[in-house]
Image (cartoon, rainbow, N blue to C red; front, side, top):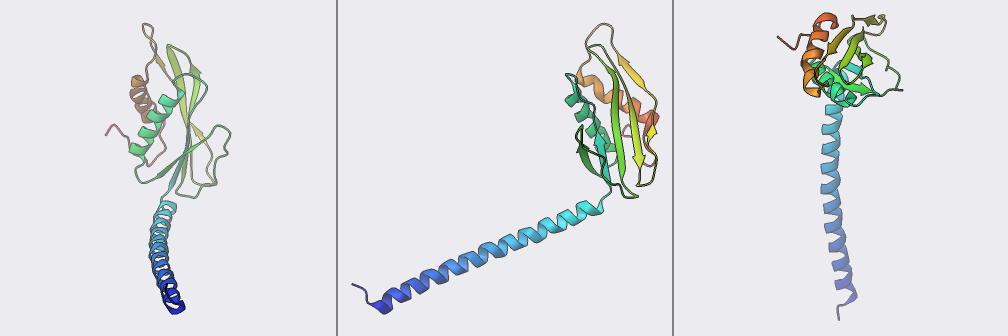
Length: 166
């Protein structure tokens, strides 16, 4: 049977190993936190492009995915943030943008949409022209959306953003 000093030494050794493991664990967590903080600061430093998509029809999500892809190509230096239907537009800094895709008419064979945008904190909202995608012989498919959105973008994109077609 171990004596009291032996039991105390074993307990102290277990405590030391536990403390060392916790120190390594929390030190690693602290390094991860500082990495996340640096990434967060870089994200905050990037201009924001807040965008809104239409909802309420069968292929609305596919249209929104195509719109997000277009925005990513047109504004590669911006941090993209999708706003929900009821979510208010965030306060914009001078370098930020707000872009909304508004579907005025949507059906199985047609879609009419326009782009609205605001650049910076004190700017007015600009509304672009409506254009339509119509098909008399087949229902609209999500594969048709990228070309339609590129055409719409070429007519009403905010200044300073590149044309993804180039």
